[in-house]
Length: 241
View 1 (tube, helix red, strand yellow):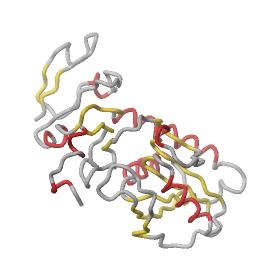
View 2 (tube, helix red, strand yellow; view 1 turned 90 degrees about the vertical axis):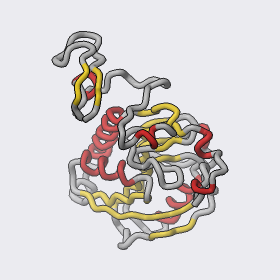
View 3 (cartoon, one colour; view 1 turned 30 degrees about the vertical axis):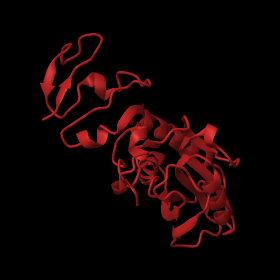
């Protein structure tokens, strides 16, 4: 059982300061209280204490991500409800592995007919910055000619990989090609890329969680967190792939 303390500024159904031995969050925390700031504490549990100990701070909470995903889905749904698009499914192309969680939640929030495809590309390895040298590890399983393609990205940083990927997909003659990205790092951009739908602009720091990893760890964190620098600067060979 989890040990969770109510933090409501006013009495709620749990009572101010009440401690509950339950895995269910009290209403104040379920609603996203307290609001995110740069010192938001990281939740811990027996099962995830090791992972959380590597997080310096929470950048975006689970609630913030959920709300922004719904907002992006509403924008896309409205834009694709025009003549020529409304009667055809959107082909979501997810970039493995980082975009998997965002793509799944985004597709559910979209609330209209979609098709899904995935590509796996590599430009990171065990590094924390994009090399710009792209390898296709898994290509699409179908022809995208005359399809309305929406590329789903987890994070846009240098723009090098995304720029290459857009050129590659455009050469396959889709009816339209747009990008939705949960995250963008404006200070890291090296190549201008047109990203129509952006969730959050974030600092140029290495972040993990909600699909994003370092050395294949932390993807299952429900929030986005800043990774402690000593984690990725460690000389421990167990971190290298």
